[in-house]
Image (tube, rainbow, N blue to C red):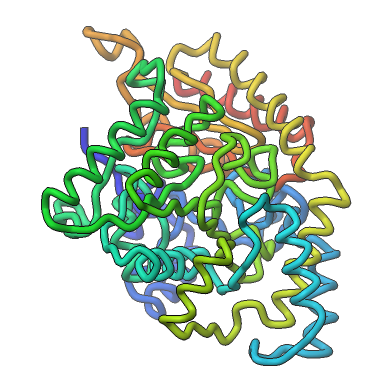
Length: 449
């Protein structure tokens, strides 16, 4: 079974017929300005007018429950964050080579959420930049070049991290010589009783392969929730043996928390669910609730060694405006107890989806932690004579994603076979809104079946 590139999941096809004149004009304007490298979602793209909380509204007044965007983690158009941005921009917004209290306040408050020995942070503007910087640090500190990633990982779009993002590679392109891919640890399709041990063993095999080919390994780079691999959430603790194996062989561990971090999985940082502390943690997307921010949280000894060899500077990463924005996001997360809400509402959503799965054999698995939930769809016995209940069904996910949009729910697809629906709403989602989603999914499934 071939994998589906991440940018092709639910991608809008501009050549398909049926667009109204107004939307078609906007699509043509976009193509003229941006060229072919601008991706839209759905068979008919949404022309967005506004958003608030967990809802988005188009120019025709249609409202959509947003279960796709993990950027506005404290809610769309959050007023506390918006006011912080506006107020700071009226006072000061410049580069990072000056002293101002705001960024220090933010750094101290953010670092207080991390365990020892993660005591330093370097700010960037995006998660891609953060992962790129993390790779620079591990190469400087280890003298190695080899990076171990999972088979369908996505870590960003700079040259260095695109090489570590097979879910975005061109079909048929050979992997870079300094990259080794290992299967992501999963239980549903493999029925593996100990995915952590298997993952650890595969990492050791990759390390041995590097050495057999004369390449020194440097790091294990892993999205701690395996987002592009299909949202592989457990069992809790299974990452610890993999981290220990990597370190035993002299590798550093980069925990990519760009998507699962900032409370998404019901804890502030997803690696805490596994009692496995990376050497470096990369941050992005939800950090600024829509304002571009990223960062690398790192052991001080590693950062000290890196800066002795390389002079790093980021013009906008960690400026006064970023500090005010990030601080406001943290205040919302903590003051409104949104991480606890993610755990509570996420458990409720997962329970409702599990109940729905009993009525629909095309739902092979419901998994997730907090408000990061995956529903895996499989081909049913009437479609497959040799049925084992685990053959992926991407076609039904494509239909469901587009039908749910028509019913007022925005959701995305994930996984190497494009057969997993991925729910990652703002962390302010309520149980009533979760019920709305499950009801619409049930309607769409009844129509599909």
